[in-house]
Length: 101
Image (cartoon, rainbow, N blue to C red; front, side, top):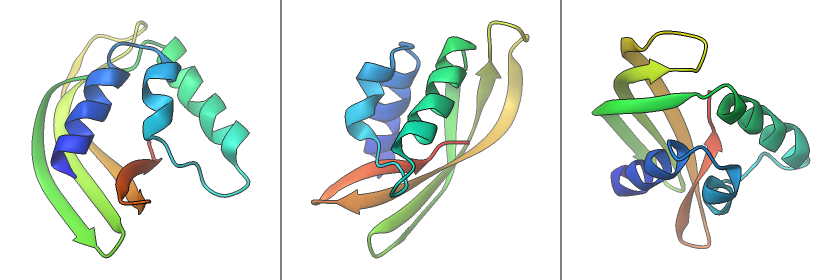
């Protein structure tokens, strides 16, 4: 899960929804809203740098990955030590992001 999260954040920081879309598993029936919310974050220049993993919890086919990072957008100065939790689900044996705050 940690490696998958690292790959996801690397693609995310490139700023293209097409790059991360294969790694996403939107909530059932909410595909459009989920992708639109992520596109807004990308358009705002949301980036996660200097990631320091703190917690990884796996329970069956669900996982959460907590980390501290330097969070930034195009409007705001970088904020060091920002806490973030990404949630994953395993679909077809592959970990995919189901919740991106």
